[in-house]
Length: 178
Image (cartoon, rainbow, N blue to C red; front, side, top):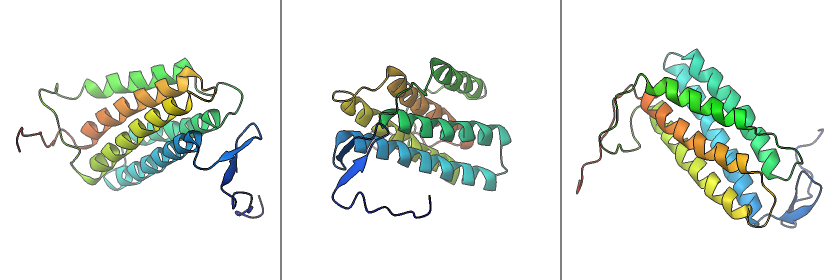
């Protein structure tokens, strides 16, 4: 790519992986944008993780997830081929289970807070949930494989457990009527 700008989107349309063009206001563009935003927030979590002592296992997991989110974005953008596989979802579940072994069971709700990495992870989680909702909405009009929404659902669970892990159980609990 020699130039970053193409001018092809100046009229409010964008191209999909299957070469069709759709309005930038389309639900599919919302889903793709939220997937991209989730990926960017995960990049911030990685950066903060490195300033907190660089847990290399977490960085490696997040690197894999960022690549998978690019695959997922392509898949939602109508790239033909199921780039997200059941094994990818199982991998997230394994990482969740491994992290949870070191966490105390939750007995009440926690607020999305904590240290910078944990708080940012909560933000990535909420954006991931929004990406899942938008992908479900887009799936009413477009062909989107079920693994795409399943991956986003599990990823939000992963990000919740990762936030707890990064916060090192220094959590802020919800006080009813607070």
